[in-house]
Structure formats: C-alpha cells, structure tokens
Image (cartoon, rainbow, N blue to C red; front, side, top):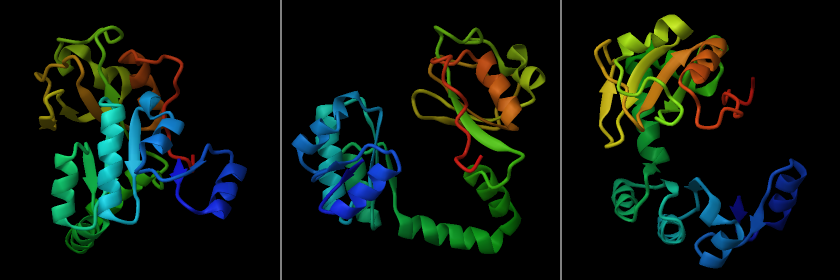
Length: 213
C-alpha cells in the first residue's frame, strides 16, 4: 500500500500489521520501493483521474504483466484509463447510479447478489478458479464429462475465456479450456472441494473466504 503525505494514517495501518509505504504512487521510485515488479495486481484509487492515469502508466511500464484496477470519476476518464492499459476501471458514481436503479427495480436479486459477494450471506459464496493444464486434469473435457457439480456440489455460473469472451450459464457440452476462469457458486465446503478437484496452481493456498468469516 502506498499513501501520499499522511504520516498518521501510515502509522495506523502499520499497527494493523499491513505493509505501507509513504510516497507518491505516480512516481516510478515509489512503485519500485513497493516492489511493483513482483506484484500481481495494482489498485489505484487516488483523488484525481490524472493521478490514477499516471500510476497505471508507470505500473504497466515497470511490470507489463500486472493487473491494474483504477478508479475514475466519469465516463471520459474511464475510456482514458482503459487506453492507458487499465485492466478494469471502476467509477463509483456510474456504478452507484446503476446499483440504485437495480435496487429499485430488482430488489431481491440485488440482495441475493450483494449477500454472496460481500459475504453477509454465510451460506453461499462466489469464487473464480483459473484453469492450468499443468494441474487440472479436465482441460479439453466438457463440464458434463468432468462432473464438477456431482463431485463438489458447486455450480458453474459462467466461464471467462482467455480471449475475454464470457459464457454465461454454460451447459454440459461446454468445454473447459486452458486458462479459463470458472466463476462458481456454492457453500464454503463445496468450493473447497472444487478447488481440490480442479487442481489449484498453488495447492497450499487456502480458499479465499470473506474477511468476516
């Protein structure tokens, strides 16, 4: 975590056990101090769109493989950040407006989805699993042949292909391909079982459950 010009906040974060650096995230030297070259993901939520743009550009230059997520204030900033290389851009104002409308029109759907994503629904969770042929025995098989549902009880809601295309509600004939991201829903035990079945890239890594669990 990099924070600019707030010594008190830095000390509070350190007391919580997190690693934090005091510096300007738009500068290469700050990102290098944070070991950006070893990072898998960057989240930049600085006050201005220009700062977030500079940070994404710097991070992508220093580590082209990093996944960069940025905050934007408007649609124009969203487009500029995407052109700069941001893998995902979130605008609180745009997203907030859409969620307000969805909460008014489809309240039960929103309550259900929010509960799963936030972890407030302690019965079901959503997780994504990256398919690696070096560990997963089901690459090239169909979902029906892999029998993921019968083996684990978890439901495959969607598949994100490596080229970015999304298959929503895949049927039994949908094939599991190398570098697919399987988006699944189930109980904590079901997802743990599915994690073992799919052969995680890091077998020692536990299932990522919400912090409140």
